[in-house]
Image (cartoon, rainbow, N blue to C red):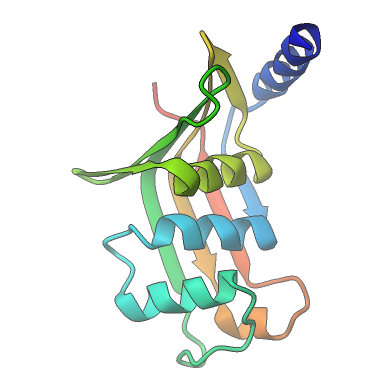
Length: 161
């Protein structure tokens, strides 16, 4: 089992080596990431947070001003999950000078969604990390309501070291 895990971690780390510049993701992963981190974003209004939550919960047609988009910006996201104490998941979200700590299942959701959208995992001493910086998501509820696969896009950069 350890051999399989070590091989999988090596493959994941090798994939991460290709993450040298900015990346873009769209679709369900982008919507999920925007909704998960948007609930903590100070620049997202309460009405927008409610809309993001409804969209992420599968409600494509929501009451939202026509022609308006939702912008979610996060300076940095850094998540970690233990592969020793498998109950441990934590993320730190940075919005300017404000830092938000998220733990438990919500942190795992953010961590897993980062991996889903292409953030490369890195492993060290019993911990797997995933991080991005300069996350900028645009959610268009009108386009999502069309149920044609569009309406959510996120851009991000590699983590700042």
